[in-house]
Image 1: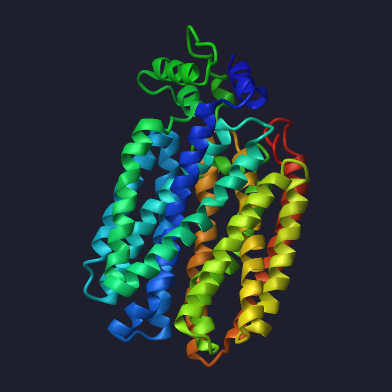
Image 2: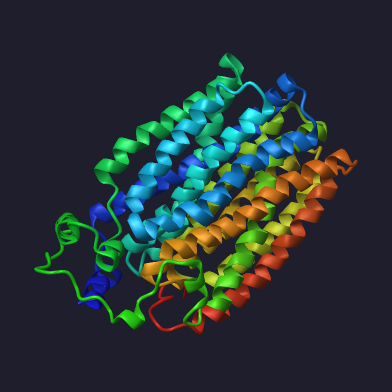
Length: 445
């Protein structure tokens, strides 16, 4: 019965309700994009007000990422016990409070603490959002849906960044955080209204009213209702939602490779997103041109993530992700050589954004299909959390290297190397995934 229910999702047509759930997940991912770019865009104003050094500014960049790592590692796994929707709602409250209170901070230390609080909510939310997208998509559309979800990040960064630029000019940097808090608060009633609970969670964890909730979801998807919940698998076949379970049943190799790929990609990813606007200014461009370079990274991400989502339905996920990583590394090196040249910098920034977001979409598509339902959010959360450790280190190391006299081109050369290593990890992950039991990696073709 469990298999038959899952089969109706995997092989059946996509209903309007399923696409609605995926659209809300994309909107939630936009909050992550806005949150990272809001610090990048306000960095110059904050630094000028409090006279911060490069290392202190790096701490502000990394504080939010530190919170995201903690949220992914320790808050996200709670969704496997209490439900995806419940944890998403809790995280939205945390994000709204962190954003709103950031506008009231009186020192870089206070702002760093509130950035960490905001990041805690975002990190806890992301894994559940990715799992819901994966579970409500059919086999045919799963990789595409997850890849399109990843485009929410650059969309949020681009739209939010454009709004932030206007707010900065007229009302100062604090207004940008007020806007972020209000936008997040508006998502809470939308999630309550239209974002469904995970079907796999209802079947495997059986919270109070599970059958009633499951049938309500099936009705909205125009699928037959159930007279009773499907039987649970034998106790010996159930997975516990613990970190140790990510290393059982032949998952250890895939888990370690996925962690390595996320760490290496996010190391390069968050360096580029956090520092590019300021480094372009340091290389001789104006402040507005620096912001334009940061926006172009994200516009490229919208195009690249969308194209990746279309291509992954037809091409091999592992090879496509590996190719995106190699091209990103080459583009990063080329960007280093072109800093200071307006036209070339902008064109290459667009390319970096396209391929780096495509690479990220590929990793997000791998993660949900490697793990069984009972540990899916734990697996996704820990993969993202390990990646966030790389994201934390990248801006900090860049700030310290700048204080030691490194020039912007040299940073881009150095940060291209981890992307090549991430490519090797993805190719090894592809081989490892193919060796796992049939069905678990159905969409990691």
